Image 1 (cartoon, rainbow, N blue to C red):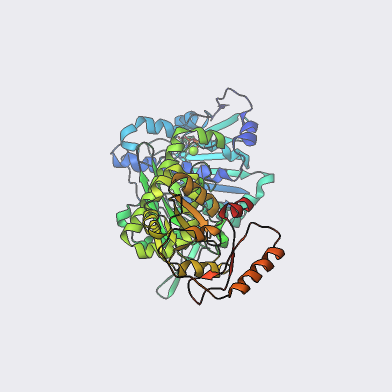
Image 2 (cartoon, helix red, strand yellow):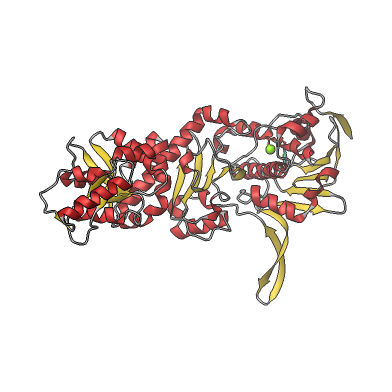
Length: 541
Ligand code: ADP
Ligand code: MG
C-alpha cells in the first residue's frame, strides 16, 4: 500500500472546489458519468485502431444506490486505470487525461466524442461525498487498484482484487447531501443531464413482457443515438416529431417544422431546431432550447449563443466549441460564439426560404404561428432582415398573402399619394375597424392585417428602408388623398343633413384633428366616417 499527498500547488484546494468551482452541486453525477463515458469511448477507439487487444462488447454504465451504506456507485466497463495512471490522472488536480488522450490520438480520435477537458470534473464528487473510492482495473494486463480519499489532500492507494475491466467510483454521500441517495432524485438528474449520452446507462431494473412471462431487464435511462447525431437523410419527418416528444415529453402539439443544423468548420455544431406552435402555448417558458456538449446536457439558458429572436424556438444544439463556466459577457465577446449565432440565423433563414419556395400554400397556412418570431428577427438582426424579403409575408384582411415586392407592385397602381409614395393601408383590428376596411375595399384598395404587438416598430423600419413607401392605418385620412381612378361618389345624406352632422360632430368632439367624410362608394358603406390624420394617430401611439 502506498500513500501520499495529492499533487496540488494550493494545499486546500478541496474547499475551494467545493465552494467555487460549480455553483450547482448536482452536476457531480454528470461529471462522473462523463468520465465513465470517456473511459468507454477511449476503449472503443483503442480497440478500433487495434491498440487494445480486448473485446469491446456492449459496454454499459451502471448507477447504483446503496441506502444502507449511504453510498452511490458509478460503474463502467471502459479502459480503467493502472496504479500509475491513478497517480497521474487523479492525484494531479487539473491534469486532464481526456485532453492528453485527444492530443495523443489527434487525427484518429477527433470525432470520438470524448467529453472531458479541464481535468477538474472528478473532484466535483467531493461536493456531495465525504469520502470517495476508486476501484479500477485497466484493460492492460496489470493488477487492479483501490484509491481512497476523504477530501483532504491525503489519499491511499492499495491493490484490489477486482477482476473485470473498468472502474467503479464509490461516493460516501455526506450528511448534508443525502438527497442523492434517493431514487427519484438520481432519476431526475439522469433524466436532465444524461438522457442522450452515447453509452447506455443502467439505473435499476424494470419488468418487461416476454411472451406470457414478465422478465426483469435493465432499466436504460438514455437514448445513446439521439436524432441530432444522425444524418438528415436518414431521418423522416416522423422521426423528427418523435424526437421532439422525446425532448419534451409534455408537449402535445406537433412542431410546425424543423431545421437540422450540421457544421464542422470553422466550428463544430450539430442540432435540431423546431418551430413550435406558439399560439396558446403555455409551455413556452419551460421547454427551451437545450445546449449539449458531446451529448451531455449543459444548460437550457442559450442566451448569447442563439440569437435572441430564436430563443422562442425549441430543440437542441450540441457543440464542443462553446466555452462553458464563463460569464455571459465573455460569451458575447467570444468570436466563435458570434459565428455560431450568425450560422444559426442563416440556417433558419435558408430553411424558411426553401419552405416558402417548395410549398407556398403550406407556408401561408403557418404564417400566423411563425410571424412573431420572424418579425422580431427582422427588427433585431440585420442579417435576418436582409434575407427576410425572400419569405416574409404581408397578409390582407381577406387572407391573401403578399411578399414585400408583390405588395409594392400591387399597391403602386392605385395607392399612390401626392408625394408619389406608395401608401400601404393596414389595420391591426379587423373587427373594430370594419367599416373603414369596407370603405377602403370599396375603393379597390388592399388592406393589410398587421396585428402583432411589434408591428409599429416593424412599420417604422420598413418605411426607413423603403423611402418610396409609407404605411397608413385604414382609419387615417390619407385614404382620402390617394390618387386613384375617377370614381363616382355617392352620399346617403342630403346636403342639409351633411351640414348638420358636421356641425354636431364638431361641437361634440373638442379635438379638431378629425376629418369627417360623408361620401361613400356604394350603398353598403357606412353613411359617414370620422378619420384622423396619420401623423396625429402615430403621435399618440
Ligand atoms: P477530465 O475528464 O476533464 O479529463 P476529470 O477530473 O474528470 O478530468 O478526470 C481526470 C482523469 O481521470 C480523466 O481524464 C481520466 O484520465 C481519469 N478518469 C476519471 N474517471 C475515470 C474512469 N471512470 N475510468 C478511467 N479513467 C478515469
Ligand atoms: Mg471529466
